[in-house]
Length: 305
Image (cartoon, rainbow, N blue to C red):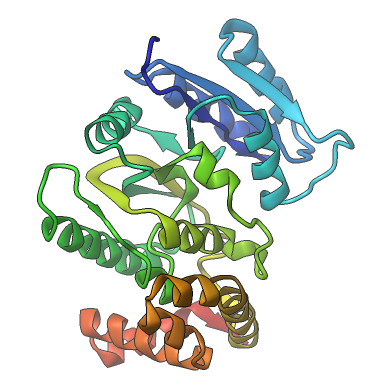
């Protein structure tokens, strides 16, 4: 292994035993082999632990853990537990129902070594399950990935590192944990206390964007499984507005002083604005892609009373 960067991966597992075998096989089939796998079971009631343990018995790179009390503690606690157990210089995530293409880690590690980057992420492709609504996926993913291509093309070099500092104040620009890899020390410096637990990823990456640049890989190296009951599908307008106000208040408290002290007064002043301004800007971005009427239709489709 020498001076080659090591890698820790940990699937967060909860009642996905029927997918877990395929997920672990997609890790073990990677062309890059210098890694450890930490499986954290978050209180599953199915046979997830048994499935993971069978893999651990035949490959010493895999370690399986449960919370001490055996209960479900949620994503934030589970990720922090995995972080405390990891030994690698970099951390990669793979949700227990998602898959990686065989060269996923090789592409990421090449980008890390060539650019000395702290964060690298890749494009994704959907794995829709029966009843899943892919309308949301087909509008959101191509739009943000096109934005990343445009940002990367504006910077010279094969693996262009660029800032997403202000972009993350508008919306989450990385669609799933399963497509990102990050330097361990940066991840350890973050606050996991998201005001909105289901938006933990956005909460984390907005903090990362304040201190690091991102490298984007255009290859679709992550297969993202989309379920019929995905939280990305239906949400009440009341909950969306409440959650939006909560996370905006959290961003303001966490990032305003950092942006101000760094001299990014535009971002700092934006954080002082009402969160409805962020909603308006995002609506205009969506409307630019598909028009006001179609944008309104897609929003209405996702909202229930």
